[in-house]
Length: 194
Image (cartoon, rainbow, N blue to C red; front, side, top):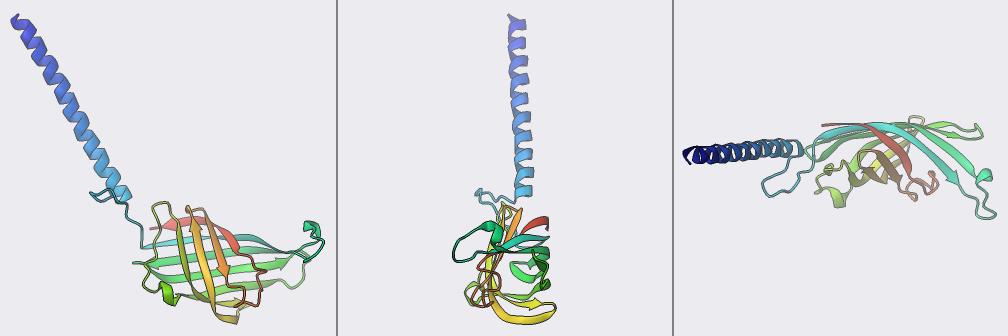
């Protein structure tokens, strides 16, 4: 009987120590996950307010005729280039684009630059930040240049990054004399640096 009690004692000690070790490891893994994901004790996830993002512009602007729509006959402009966004402590410190606009017929190719981005008056109190899924949406104004010459000042512009993968840049159509054909400029996110 004495050996039975010793056996039961060993089994209990073995299983409870394993449970304690497992729980300790789970706590360590949870703490490590919380540090990486920046989760506070209330399980709310912090957003990221200091980062840089870069990427490529790769878009097609299609001007649709008002009658007898045929995609083959629509006027198309290929947009290709690059963009960069820098945010420090929730403030946009830099947003620049530089992209070629090349009509399919080879006529009138030109370079666009979007510079001097500023948050609009309604967003000045907004902290610009990436969500935990690397998304953001911000509105402001910027200057738009063609071939290095400023054509439009303080153009309303919306910038959206979706899931750290794509970017949509939407210049206000009225502010740009409908230069972008009532369409957004699209691209990809190649890197987010925190």
